[in-house]
Length: 202
Image (cartoon, one colour):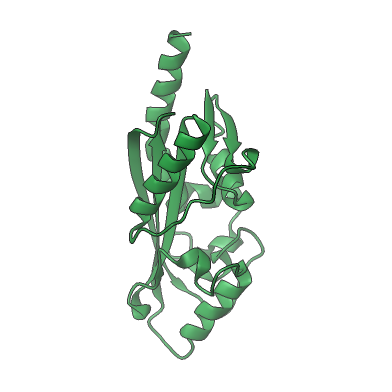
């Protein structure tokens, strides 16, 4: 079964492929469609953005499509950056720009509690909503960057459960406890049944 990931972010695509590797899927991404218009993520929730990305991408490409949207919610910043996590430091910013802004915003602030939330959405080739799932992981923002792995905010997000930053974990460890891993594992059984059903129908 072919599944389109509604993203051009190579790091995100790589993580999703690793998590879904247990299934017999032919995974492609938005990068395989050069004419695919950029989806404007203008919804006020991660669920709204994920649904919009999945539906618009599926309608353009005519493929079963998976999209996710992730937010970083920092308690002392009243939930910011929230849905704007990817562009916290402005349009066309880098991962490092976002991390530096976060560390600056939290300078001299002791309450550094934070939460990553991901909403993953699966739609069919006509954009009909099939499944949604959410994953959450709690932790806090560090004072300095730690670790070399991962991407985004990983080197400044200390995961309470792992007792390390995400950037100090290898891929398998991170997928087991991360927000994205938790959301996608909820979709796995549905995808597996969908693959079997389509296989039975030829």
